[in-house]
Image 1 (tube, protein in one colour):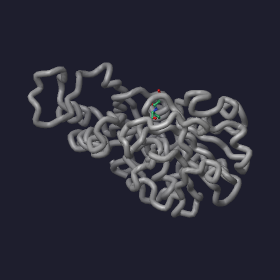
Image 2 (cartoon, rainbow, N blue to C red):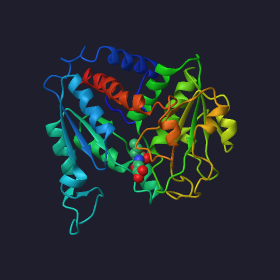
Image 3 (spheres, rainbow, N blue to C red):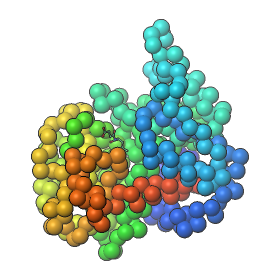
Length: 319
Ligand code: SN0
């Protein structure tokens, strides 16, 4: 693997899931693989799980992780080309990424969308510039449109906890007070659609009208505005808020009645409930679920280590 920005960078998804679960059993089996190799983890936005789990994955493989919150600690970054830098930005991404490539063997980048200009966000301009100007393998730690390490951890978690051969997995929109990116649901949908074609799961998406995801992320998914229809008989529920893609970056409804709670689980097949975290209790997801046996959120976050470790192992093997 030379790049990890989406499910399309993975040749064999079931094999990668299996490899991650094997690493979970033998975390230090490849501790020589990353010796004398450096990974730079560059954050333009906040992080808890991604930052800690990717550092831990790198350490398990014998790598040296170096971390920078470039939004707070770095020079103000210019990402546009062809501008005279006589304003507030101090350093161009061409030099910044180039220098990072000198120090690191692998780079991880986190960069959220602006949620103002859809074309700009969906062009993944910042990400593509880091890839181009660093000249090193880049791992997405969440980009404007995707969060593939999260989605891989989600699939690992489903594989680990499933009680039937082909569970029904439901992505359900959740209420929120802030407009959030589509990155997590886009990416989850893309990975689950792939898992569906591999025969691992059946996949359903439910959301209020106006919250349709970009079609490129949902090939073969069953999509319904009727949440009850989606929840009926489900084995895994993935709750997540996102802002509108059509009416870009907007909140269209307060989402009354869309929050998952224990009552809503009655029509499922004793579903396990997932969320990428951070979660706003009793706004996005009921605390009655979060504090119950139905919740997988902590185990899911734990699996972020094995997702990152499987990806880094594959990249290290091709360095
Ligand atoms: C991010 C998102 O993409 O939805 C990161 C998820 C891993 N979540 C947030 O920004 C939550 C912000 C909030 O105020 O709840």
